[in-house]
Image 1 (cartoon, rainbow, N blue to C red):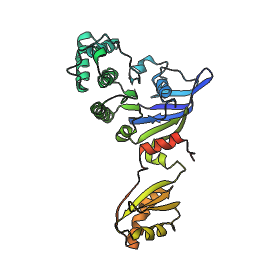
Image 2 (image 1 turned 180 degrees about the vertical axis):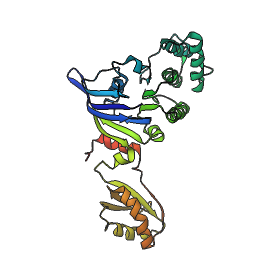
Image 3 (image 1 turned 90 degrees about the vertical axis):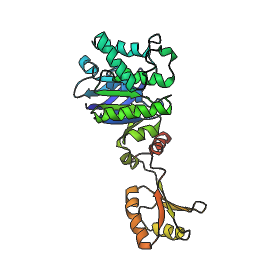
Length: 312
């Protein structure tokens, strides 16, 4: 399913939640990132039709999610905060929501058992939810959201409080759902997990969409130099290589770390650097152990966002 937001603004009285958001989400996994209060949850609720935009237009396959009740049946939502009937067991809870989708009791229980078992709750599904650990509660929320096989799955901080085993299991299931053609939108502060799931991200800060697309393309929009480190085999090559690279137009600066025997090149044209450096090394007859950038991560991209660097 295709999700499209066009110039969407949401006001809460005198407070603006999001402003002029443009976003398009297609099949597969999209990560939505930003600091607390950035507007991630507001954006998700508008997509789900739980909140009406003050201005702008939101459509899901060309339909309005706020007014189209049939469309809502295609949505699965995992909220950030718990919203359980604590006196129920996991099985009763998931079955209850299936019954709300006009599923008969026996079929609802069968499907709930299957969904909970797939998420590793075979032995705990008949226990009361108020006895569940944080990870078990996360799995139960996901089971409730996915048990009726929705086409769109929106997950607000699904890894929050989850142990490593639970995170790995949830990531595996998300990947399977995406491969089966589902449209999945995830917000998370665990950037490594998002980076493992998808390169397609949307960056939101202060209620505004800063960028959307492949994280490598977005990284190139940030108008700050990016460090790329080169580790030569021979110490004597460091200064020779540094001097040579300063002749290139894409080099902003170079620095040498004598302790680690590394040369760092600062650039805003990383693609050119990775393309040209091997040619220079070959011509100068310099052998290196590796070329890498610790700045080539979602954590770094997120940090630049939070720091408020200027964008082109």
